[in-house]
Length: 121
Image (cartoon, rainbow, N blue to C red; front, top):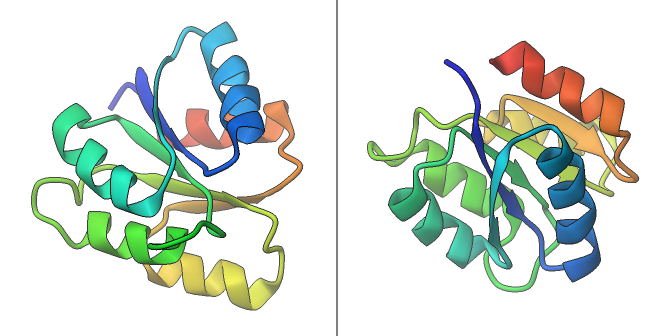
């Protein structure tokens, strides 16, 4: 599956901008969500090829949103890479158990992120 549309989910405008800039320079179409709730809704309307999911957000956190998206028949095919400051091994294991395909810790290395995206494509 070729990845062309990526949804960036982060409550930080700065993080959304940084990730959007990395992806935009590589030709990806980028859509944004500012919360877990918005991510779940937008994943159904936009059907992105990939979701980059922050964890620490008010309301529905990234783990909960990942679980909701990966357990919904309409969106379960969309791979999710968790992008978070939570770098503990237990966080990574938990994120993958929620249905994420990969896990990246912030600050995000453009090369590492693009490599993980290429591996999914």
